[in-house]
Amino acid sequence: MLPLLIKFEDLESLSLHGNRLKNLPKDMSELKNLAELDISNNLFIDINDLAESLKSLPGLTHLIMNFKSHQEENFIRNSLPRL
Image (cartoon, rainbow, N blue to C red; front, side):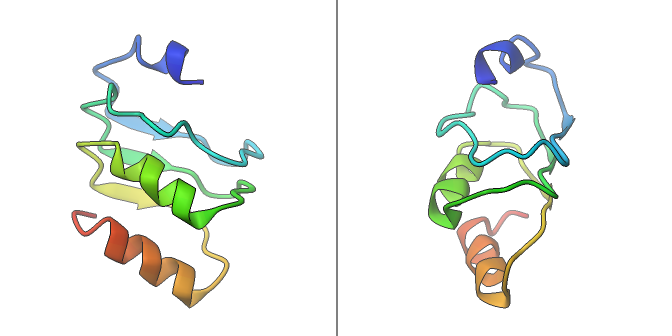
């Protein structure tokens, strides 16, 4: 996914809603201008890996996703305080 996306370095908003994704690339830092990301309705396996991937987005300020529990939501909120 990322090799194609990094060609769009000015990308500010991205919807990956409902793509049955199980994970995201670990390093998405090339998407410097990405501020809004919708990853709702996917099949993410490991919340720790997901948080690390999301942390690599330097401009991320708005995240749309589904949580399996309040603990998962709190973990993401604590991991990404700039949201």
